[in-house]
Every structure is written in structure tokens, then in C-alpha cells.
View 1 (cartoon, helix red, strand yellow):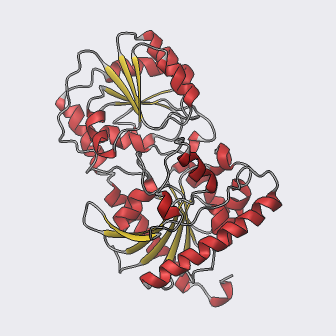
View 2 (cartoon, helix red, strand yellow):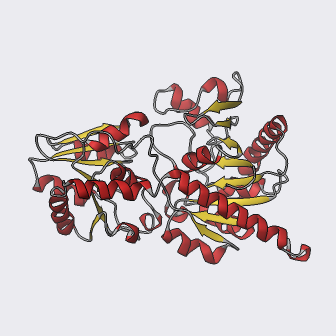
View 3 (cartoon, helix red, strand yellow):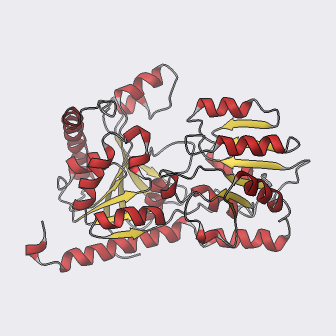
Length: 404
């Protein structure tokens, strides 16, 4: 990578948790060569109340309330250090329908965040950093140009207009933010197509895989009967009609669902089948072994506006363990045409699962593992860093009169 940078990442994803996040993976890799301050997910007072009621996991309440230091340095498994900042709780605003009221409350939250970030930057001796906003354009609009940043970057990994939780205010704020940033980095071809016309520079850096967690050298167990698995969140993206058809057609197969349960109704529907186990989230360090135990890994997503912008993390995670993959044709998966099966209907999907079960020879397993190795997060971080370098060169070379 190029010379050392100071990077402030306004992260929407929570730093801690029991599922993989592209922002966390990229910043962890970048921290090997650069100074990174990760501003954690902005928890709200609602999150704290839910935590007290046992309904939700959050960061340490004592840290959120400032009893523990909000700024801390954490040594990661690879030896690098990353700086983590927990903000004071925000006032929840997404429920507001009025754009004016939402923006007023955004300003209150934004001012509190600005003070905390500036204080952390001063302590860490950050000057003129690169600011990377990870999928929080509303906060990005309020905070732009507040930190003397030499480069402002938007990292977009989902189609915000199709995300229910932010659909009221996300699209208008994203449109404004896209027009003002120096660089937009997206994670899929679908997002590249939709965001490029709205921003001055747009670069594709696809999702990767942690080869430390998904270590293909783990032994693949032999199951008494086929074990079909899904690693990921049970949420609105999952096609329950397709899954029900598959599960009912093969009652002698076991189906395991591992990951966050965002939709309890979906979990309840799946739980009615005797050959289904909904296991919920599992420790990250155990996920590789779990995936190695799948005879086939599923990506059963609906095909719609939300999923069109997805480059699924799980596809490389399955492949890294040598597990064959069967997916719906929800997005552009042309990268995987030689290592995954893609069906365009419930019947085609079921047929391909049966075909995938036969792909047990060592050559096929090795091919899948080798493919995933080329998509490691280290390589993705290099591409991300190269995009930052190119944007810095463009901005430096730009005539003063052209700088807004």
C-alpha cells in the first residue's frame, strides 16, 4: 500500500457482533498500514432501553454513557491496532415522517457527534484525515467539511431506497451526499450502475472473505444425510416460498439456518418443519467449521430492487470451505459462473441443489477454495486504498477554481 494515511471511518455497521461486515473487515485490513479511527454505529436511547429489557445487544452501556472511556485502542488478531470511538447515544429519528423535523434532530445528533470526533482526533493527533462514511449519508451531509478532511468518501454497500428502516429519509440525503463527495466506493455491479451517474467518481470494490475465519484446511465431515445450510440473516431478502418448496420436496435432508433472526415470522415458518434447525447467530470463530459441515450452501434471495445491489459475503465464505453454492439469480453473479450454481426458478433451484450434492470430488473442492483465496479481504483493502490514492491525485490536480 502507499504512504501512511489517517482515516476516520464513520461506520454504520457495529464494530462488534456475531456476523461479518464488509466495513469492519476493510478497516481492519487498512489498519495494518494506516492509522484508522473507527467511529462506531450511533446507538440511540431506544437501543439502551431495549438492552435493559433484554431485547437487543448493544455496546457497553457504561461506555455509551461515558462512565468508561469512549475512545479506546484495540489490538486485532493480526497484530495491528485500530482506534474505536463510541458516541454518546443519539435521539432516534428514523420514525419521523417530517423531513424538517428529521433534519432538526439530525443536527442535534450531528453536533454531539462532531464534538466527540474532533476530541478523539485531537487526542490521536489526526490532521486533515480521509473521512470514509459507511452508509450513513444523512450524518455525512451534516458532518462534511467539519474535520478538515483532505478527502471525503462514501462507502455504499446497499440500495438505500429499498431499505425499509431508512427509506423515508435515506434516498434524499444520499442523493445530496453523492453529489458532494470526492469518491464513492460501492460493493456490487448493481450499485455501480445506480450510483455512478450521481457522483463525480465511483469505484467498485467487491466484498471479500476472511481466510482466517474461513480456513479451507479444516476437515469436511461426512454427514449421515445431506445437510443443506444457509449462513446469513433471516430477513426480508429471503425467499420463503422457494425455501418451503425445497424443504417440503426433500424431507430426508437436513436444513440448517445460521445467523441473525431479523424476521421472527420467517424463523417461525421455518421452525415448523421437522428437518429444519434455526440455530441463530453463532460465534464468528466457529463459522468456518459450521460451513465446512454443509454439503451445500444456499443463497435463497428474492429478486428485487434491494437484492439487485448485493454482492453476498456468504458466497466466498462457502467457497473458501470448499462447499458448493446454489443461489437464485437475484443479482449479477457472473463472477461465479464457473464455481457456483444459479437458478432462476424454484424448480431450477431444487434441481441445482441435487446436482451440487454430487460435486464432492477433490478437484471441484480445490477449485472452489482457490477461487475464494483470490477474493481475500487483504486484496480488497489494497483495491480500496488504490481508489483513495487515485482520488487524492485527482483532487490535488484539480484547479482551485473547480473546487466547490
